[in-house]
Length: 252
Image 1 (cartoon, rainbow, N blue to C red):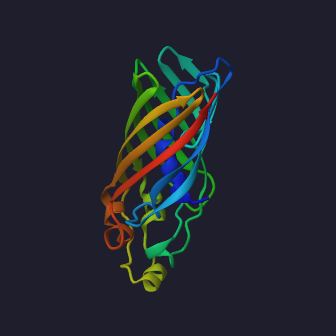
Image 2 (cartoon, rainbow, N blue to C red):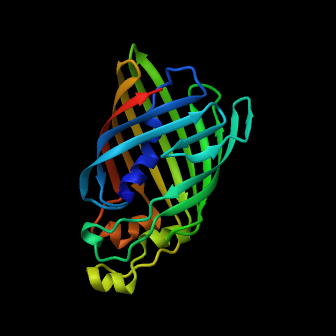
């Protein structure tokens, strides 16, 4: 499974699920679709990929999803939730212009998520650090999510986000070693600090049958700082990353 695809799902999963229809401890959705995604984070080359969709919840206690990982809601009080979780960092698939680069292996992360939902908007702050794979350091993210019904069977959602990757995380993803530079023709490069990534995603869903929905998705992220200045992005890529897609899901 492509790691760039998993990265994009990590950004979009919260938009692929409408409110659960069944009254049961278990709820969520499962489905599949097609998305147009960059070859890797920072690439300007795109390709279409078949993608799965998964979101599982066991009441208010536990969850499993592409975006949030596997977590347990240890603390819930009024509008606040605190959840330790196991996640996944996608590493980097070296395709196209960086196919000669050393591969950055994916791995597991461990983290903590604090969520606040006083009304229709849900806000979350997440911090995580890799425990396996080739990436080290840490990443912190701030997200807001709104999902609203606008007409019978129609839902829209929006998710602005901001994330910070530490200097070590940035180096592991965007450095160009002497070996990689010699093989690819790109300039050698070492990131000196972490970087911010800004994101905005939207979706529109139509519930065309009982438990079934069709969702259209669009999103954009902007790389900044030392990630944007990396030859991987500056010479052969693009700091602005787009993605679009369509997903069919079964909700339960």
